Image (tube, each protein chain N blue to C red):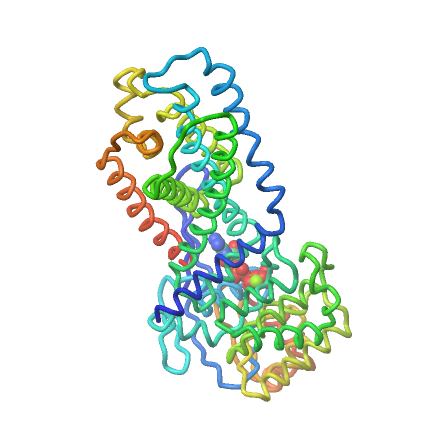
Length: 242
Length: 249
Ligand SMILES: Nc1ncnc2c1ncn2[C@@H]1O[C@H](COP(=O)(O)OP(=O)(O)OP(=O)(O)O)[C@@H](O)[C@H]1O
Ligand SMILES: [Mg+2]
C-alpha cells in the first residue's frame, strides 16, 4: 500500500491512498502488463517496485530478496524507463548514456560498445554529441528506453514506453521487448494502448483507483467476459468501477 | 568495497567535471566580476584612506573576500542539484542506480570545492596584482577548503529540502548576502552591537574570515575557530547524507 501525506495550503495534513491491497507475482521471462485509467496507481506501483518510493505497508521481493534489505543487489537487476523524461539536461545524448553506464559500474570498453550498439538500434547515433534538449519528443522516448538497457537489466520496468512514438518505432520497441523476454528478461509494462498490451503481454493486471480488479492472460480475460478484444474488457471492468 | 565507493564518487564528480569543462572560460570570467569590484571599490578606492593596524585595508579585506567568495561559489555550485531534483528529475538516475548513496553527496561536494578553489585562485591572482600581501600556507588552504565544503553542504541541504526556485533564491538574498558583509569580511565584528555580534560570531563564515586573515598575515590563528569549522562541516555532512537518502521515501 502507498499512502501519500500532504500538507495543504491551510497547513493541515491530508492523506491520500494511491494503491492498496495489491498482491501479485510475476514470473521470470514474463511480459506482465499493468493496465488502468489515469491515476489508477500504475506509476506508484512501479515506483515502489523500483525503490523510488517506500511502500507505507507491504513487501516486495525479487527471487526471495526483500528489496529494502538488499537494495543495492536489487538495483543491479532493474532497468527503469520512467513515464516522464528525466535526462540530465546539461549533458549530451552520449554523456547521458555514459553516466548511466558508469553508475552501473561498467568498464570503459564495454560501455562504449554497448552504447554505440543501442544508439544505433534506435537510430540515434547521429545525435550522440547533441544536447538532449535538442531531441524531438519521440527521440527522447527512444533514448529513455535504450538508456535503461545499457547495463543489461534482468527485470525491465516500462512505464508507458511507447507514448509519442510513430508506428514504425513502436513496432520496433515491441520486437525489442519480445526479444528481451525470450532472453529471460522479465518485463513489467504499463500502457494505455490496450492493443499493445494484447500484442505483448503474457498476463495483464487491471487496476482502478488503487485496487486490483483482475489478473489473467488476455485470452482468459476475453473468454471470461465474452468480449472480442482486451480493450472492451478493460473498458467494461473499469466502467463498472466508476 | 572501498574501490567501488571511490568509483561511485568519481562518477558523480565526472558528471560535474564534464559540465564545468565545457564552460570553463565562461565560468572563470564571470567569477571575476564581483571580487574585482570589491577589490577596486573597497581595497583600492576606499581602502587607501583607511588605516588598519599592521597593514593596509587591502590586506585586511582580501582574506574576507576570499571567505565570502568561496562561500558564494561553493553554495551556488551545488544548488543546480535543486533543478535536477525538482524540475528535470535527473536525480532519479542516481537514486535508482546501485551506488553508495554517500557517493552522490561526496562527489557533488568535491565538484563544488573545485569550482570554489578555482575562483579563489583567481582572486588571489587579482589581489597580488593590486599589491596585497598574503601568505598562502597549507593550513590557509585547509581552512579555505573547509569553508567551501561547509557552504556546499548548506547548498546541498537547501537543494534537497526546498521545493521552489523562488525560495532557493531567497536563501541567497536573506542568508548569504548578509553574511557576506557582516561576518568579519569587511570590518571587525567588534564594531557590531553586542547582541548582533553574539549571533555573527557563531556563524562559520566569521571563523573563516578570522582564520584566513590570521594565517594570511602570519599572526596567531585560533585553534578553536578551526574546531568550529570542522564541527559545522561534519554535522552538515550527516544532514546531507540523511536528506539524500530520504529522497526515495
Ligand atoms: N507524489 C505524490 N504525492 C501525492 N499523490 C500522488 C503522488 N504521486 C501520485 N499520487 C496520486 O496517486 C494516485 C496514483 O497516481 P499514479 O501516478 O500512480 O497513477 P497512474 O496509474 O500512473 O496514472 P497515469 O495513467 O495518469 O500515469 C493519483 O491519485 C495521484 O494523484
Ligand atoms: Mg503513470
